[in-house]
Image (cartoon, rainbow, N blue to C red; front, side):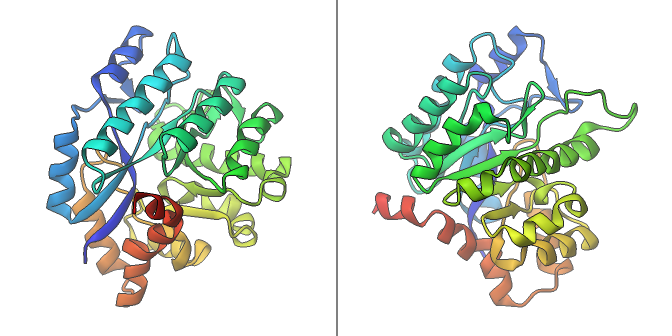
Length: 294
C-alpha cells in the first residue's frame, strides 16, 4: 500500500546548513547535517511508495541563526518553490522564528495565507521557553483563527541532559512531552480549540502525557522512529488509529522502507487500520489544503 503523506519529511538546503555553520552548529544530536536535495527526497519517496512529503526543518530550527527572521522567510520561500515545481509531491510546514514572537505570528500568517502551506512547524522549545509561554499567544491566535495545523518537532532541552545519553533518543522525547504539558497547563488546548497539533516521533515520552492525549482530540502523532512492537502498540493505543500519520524523518532517518514494513508486520493491523495511518488520517488533516489545490 502506498503512503499518501509523509508528515515528517525534513529538508536540509545548503542555505540552512550555512546559517547553522555560521554560528558554530555543525551537527545535530551527534549527527552531521545530511546531504539533501529535492531529488534525493523524490528518489526516496518513489522507492518507498510515498506520494507526497510535507517539508519541514528539523532541530534546532531557525532560532540559533544570526538572523532567524530572515532565515525563516528564505526557508519558506524555498518550500514554496518546491511546492510550485512539484505540487503533487511536496507540501510544507512553515519555519517559524519563535525567538521573535511578533515576527513568528507574522510569518505564520504569511505562510498560511499567502503561500498556502499545510501548516506551521514549531520546535518544542525556543531557548528554553516552552510553547505554553504567554509570549506565543498571538502566534497561536493567528493559527487558531485559520483552523491551522501545528507540527511540533522535539528540540534539545536547554538543561544539560544525562551524560552519555544521546538527546535524539532520550532528551528529545521528554522535551516534546514537556511542551505538551506546557500547552495543557497554559490552557492553550481550551483557548485555541481549532488548532490540530501533530506531535513528531510518536508524541514523545507517552506515559507522561497519555492522559492528556486521550482527553485532547486535537492531538495527533506521527510514526517517525516508532519501530519496535511495544512502541507501536503504545502509540496506537494512546492516540487511536485515527490520530496517527506516517512520518519518515528523512533525510535524518534513512530507514523509511524498514519503518513502513515494521508497521505492516509488528502492528499486525487489518487493512483498514493501515489505510488510516498510511493515507486517510493525513488526507483528512490536510483536507482544506487539498481543496485549495483543486
